[in-house]
Amino acid sequence: MQVHLSIGENHRFELHEALLIYRDRQSSFITRHDVTTRKDAPPTLGPAQPLTVAFIESLVHSLGGRRENKLRTEQRQ
Image (cartoon, rainbow, N blue to C red):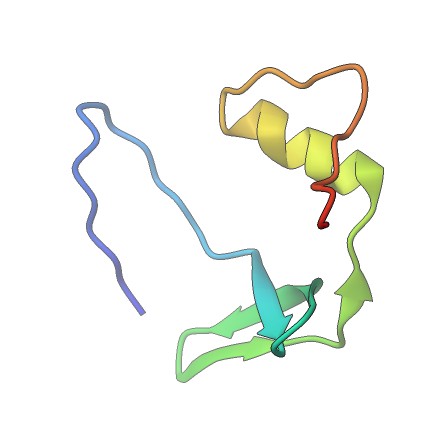
């Protein structure tokens, strides 16, 4: 699979992980999957892994964002 994206700089992105979002009417959760790629076959997802705070912090950092000292969760009333 090839994806072309113009962001003004030269980067070579490769698919390494996938986040899957599951929802029902009242709640949701996200799983992380490692991705295996082969030249002669489409990418495949590995087993589901729960998200960790360390992974989320690493993701935010790699996206160029700043992380807060605390993770904030939305309070539903």
